Length: 386
Image 1 (cartoon, rainbow, N blue to C red):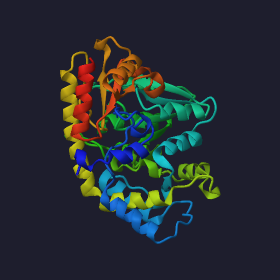
Image 2 (image 1 turned 135 degrees about the vertical axis):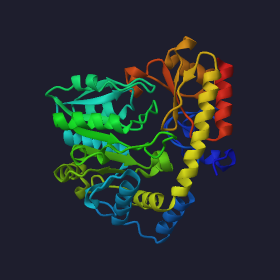
Image 3 (image 1 turned 90 degrees about the vertical axis):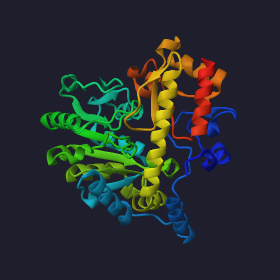
């Protein structure tokens, strides 16, 4: 199912944008944007086909399709031990929009929001777009204990929000229940909201397990807004479908008002909701096989990278990206990216501040959501270029 033969490279060259196959030269392998090379699950394709064949593609309800919200409620309860009212689960246009929506709802000019370093650029971008100030809290790669006293020391009267990315892109860290409990304790103590980005939560490798911070206690749940989506686990980035949810009803009403769904300025893609419903209700066996494949690719990339002189990496606990330390090569991250593109014809994501924050300096990120053949060829090229 997840072999090289199952990948349609011709279609990827036509459709896979955002630094991927459709944006690079014919001979370049892009290990870039966190988007799988494999087609989505057959069950999802069938559900979309059946819906489209009806011939009706009408407006959906502003609050989202009831079947989708019910599937999400069951998912959170059965898979995350997290009880959410069905009418406080809002389908939205992608998890990325969810992050922006939460920032726009909770932040005003002059406010501050704590975010991790390194972490995906969307957090700092959305905080800044709300005219607030990002305050970075370093969490280096590795299994070292998180210094929450240091995080708490960053809190000022201007602090309104803590941004949690779990699992953490780009390092692949999966936060433990005790770590999440401490973060939640701090948020409750200081009456801060938590934006919990859980889009990677289905991509977690044994023996690690995922815990949704909102499931830990009613008090923590009351301060938490959970954001997730379907692009990583199910390959549905192009359908632009995500979710925002909270147990806090007044907070949910503020988010719903800010979303502009009732004015049709924004709204969740109906086909995306159909696909998301099928993913949650019919594609779980496919997801299990996919994660097993990713686990094998994780071992491959970790072992091979650590055999290449000048490179070193830790096996990620979650996510399908490898965060590779390149300091011993003598290249900066940007120089390494250019060298690999020119000499190896492999495109990687450099650990630049604009992508991940200053904590990514000396690193590059490689996606391994592809076939063993493609990944092996790319690593062979990288080794030869060094």
